[in-house]
Structures are given as C-alpha cells and as structure tokens.
Image (cartoon, rainbow, N blue to C red; front, side, top):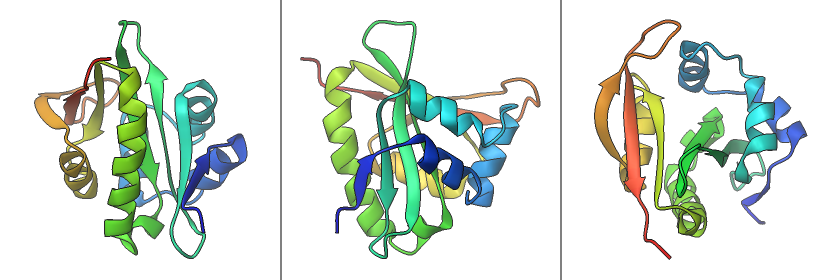
Length: 152
C-alpha cells in the first residue's frame, strides 16, 4: 500500500475534523480555523497526504509560497494516526522532505512551543529552532524553525 499521494481539498476537510488536539491548538493559536487547511492544500507546492499502514489519514504537508525568492514556508498537520506508526511516519516525512527541499534554499515556519511531538519531528527532519516569537492574535509562544537546503 502506498503511504502518500497528492493532497486534495477533500483530504483537507477530512483532516480538519480529525486533528490531533495539539495540532488544532497550534492552528487556532495563530487565529485560524482548521478549515484553513483547504487554502493550504490549494495554494501550496508539493501538498501531500500521508496515511498509516491501515490506510487511515495520518497527515497533510506542503510548502506555502513565501515572498522571498528561494524560500518556502513548510507545514504539516497530523491526526492521531501518526502516533500508531511514528517511525514509519518519520521515514515517509524524510523522503517527502528530501524531494521537496530541492526547490528551495531555505524552508521555515512557526510551531507551537507546547506541541512536543512536532518538536521531535522537526528535529528528526533537520530543522533548527532559532527563536521564540509571539504572533498575534493571542501572542502565544511559537518557535521559529528553519532548515537550509542544498542549493541547485
């Protein structure tokens, strides 16, 4: 069974109703609703849906446009299904990231400082937390993460 495919709007809607509580809190802490995932899927390069071995939706990832040339805003939102297969999920995420990072000099984003599973994931994927920021509207602590990519 293939564990990933191109993401669809339907995947985003389904994921929005199945989010890990920590991922929901991360989205809402930035003033968005989970249905913003539809925009993310429609407007991101490399939008990909991941599944676990049972075929359950595990997450969606993509790279949103950034106004800076060679820079992308990477994102990934998950369901509790990733907790059943963490090693498999990390391996799939690494393969996906290796494919997409070739298009960028740097990828970055912000993540809720309380989302411990994401801390582990981004570390395994080679990201570095460079600072803590307090974005509106709630001014909660988010870590700004970056990864320098191999240039073409």
